[in-house]
Length: 180
Image 1 (tube, rainbow, N blue to C red):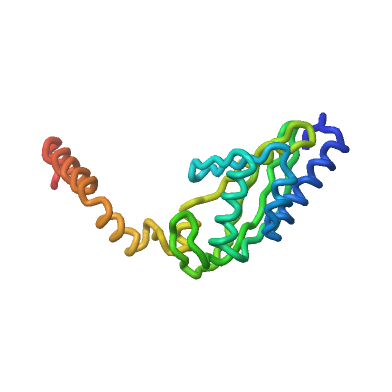
Image 2: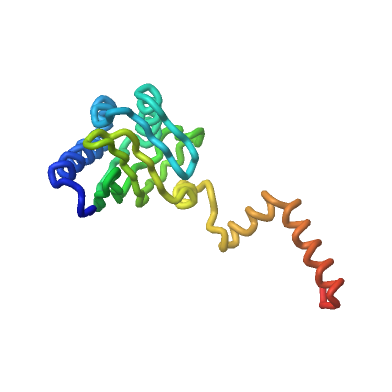
């Protein structure tokens, strides 16, 4: 916590965060919107930005349709002068289309970090960080890179790149007098 942050302001911001997480877990779009002075989400792993009420409603509507048991479980909040960093578990079952991905039926539980940007006690942005590869692996879309399936997938998906890399390595070894 910042030494200069007023305890009343800290409490007001925490109340906004508590209401925000509760509204997300309840799938209460009006409640989520009500926690913002200006609704805005920045999803860092995908580069998506949802700015304004309509965009935020669309974003969460798609989340709730794709993951109907979507829940947020806050772990810890770290208050700063202009923002609050909140760690949370986000979980749910992928039962509907989500970001173009057809339902997998798989349960997902990931640790996320939300940076909640404030102007005084008014929430103006939630910036979300999480490991996208973990999400994709859990949903069965991506493979562990070091597994046999992951290595086969890489060879099948990137034959030209791997061929060039292998060819350059052979040329390098031959020109340096090494064994191919």
